[in-house]
Image (tube, rainbow, N blue to C red; front, side, top):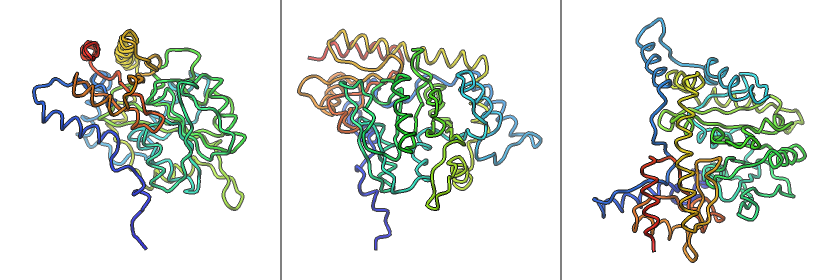
Length: 398
């Protein structure tokens, strides 16, 4: 018997963004004088909001005094941040949550992968295709069966609710990579499906702050009955520049219960709390004070300015590419632009052409699944000047 978890052998050799990094590094070594414009990996380029920096500096100073020093914190997160989350992200939208339904983490990616710890390895997993790779890879690592839900231009990149029962469904809206969104009616259809089939929805709302359309829900809990079927995951990375600081949170409502083998109903909130207490020592105090500052009056203004900056980039890229004749999706309520490749070019072919001919880094859609073939993803997380220059370079493509 092998001591390996051989499910790992079922994964692709490299993570998508590692492959891109290797190709970019090889290009840089061969072309050291080329000015690369990076619009591929969704890392932010604007600095942390000043309110967050001020809060971090204050928290660091507290660590220098025994009276205010903080060591191990609560695995679930400090109450000051959990209260700020509830009071600002949910209560104004008519959603009532208890603080102990909110779990602060070191980022949405970690929780998207770790949530499977409290779920059976026999669960079937539904993911949209194209898809953020972590949803698939983390479940392949556990040996679960994956069901692909096709998202295409024909359905607005919103898959039809399946006819068969799927145990766990991952939904990410505003969507990474396509930049598309769900209406309340479309999301309600998924909640109704989950309630009928005793399905759990893992709802990744990392980009909700980019929504400007009042008809688009910011949280799945705006839909009646969603607390009974949905876990929501959020991030401070793309809203407040925390990609390097690392902070996010997951909401596990106490109304969400699954049946155990003995027929008893078990709260997933209890299981996730037990998992976190065992495997996680909590997000740092300094980071959580910075996250709390996001919700201060100054923090809200500064975060909004950053989001507006990126959405200006998105709008500019979208309009310029459409003017050049490209078929473009997203970029309206999300910081991603999903671009159809020219006729006859695959995703990696077009990626290589953009890299080698105009020195612009994008992300090949095929890296997000089979349905992503024939597209590239462009992020708005760049400098505005770089976005302008990148579009000028697109104009030179033959």
